[in-house]
Image (cartoon, rainbow, N blue to C red):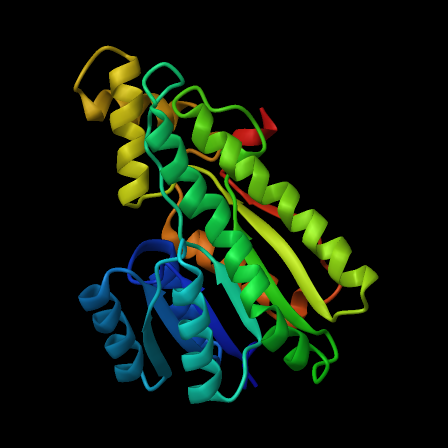
Length: 267
């Protein structure tokens, strides 16, 4: 028996990166997965690859900042698979702008995706998750993507850090609210460190600017020197943590934050 046999998962921002790898590992673990993104062609390719791996996957268009997109995506998933057991609020953006550089429009874009997207996903998936949670010994699960930058300050993008800190506290508060109401919905967050993704490349570019150079290799080397574990993280490192939090193996965890950062926040 696999860890997620019979579970239905909806993953936002799943066309590529951490979201796509999470979808792959969830299918491997026995789940039926909905790949949700604004990158329609890339998302369809990801879903087709999962189908080719003998899994069952569905692509749904989802702009996490739009309430109507969430409503349509959840309806499509529950209509196709018959329910929803797992929500992964993975979609996020990183701008790499400091306080003096960032405009109000930059801030509003960060908030729209990193905060509003998590709120809308949680609110609108709640009825389906509450219903499925009643049928499971350990309930249903929400996993929110925060960041190591949501636990400690970020010298490169304080506004990103602000939004991810908000995700961390929203996770705890939602977990407590659902517990108080008797809903069998576990809510946990995961906090990646520096990962080999497109967003990771943006971080290197931001750090290079802070060093007064365009040398991405120098910024990468400096980042590696700060990592106690001695390497950058991979999408698989994070996806494995998400699968764990979504599974019944984490049945006694709610309101918790799983830190997967190579030791960054231990310093």
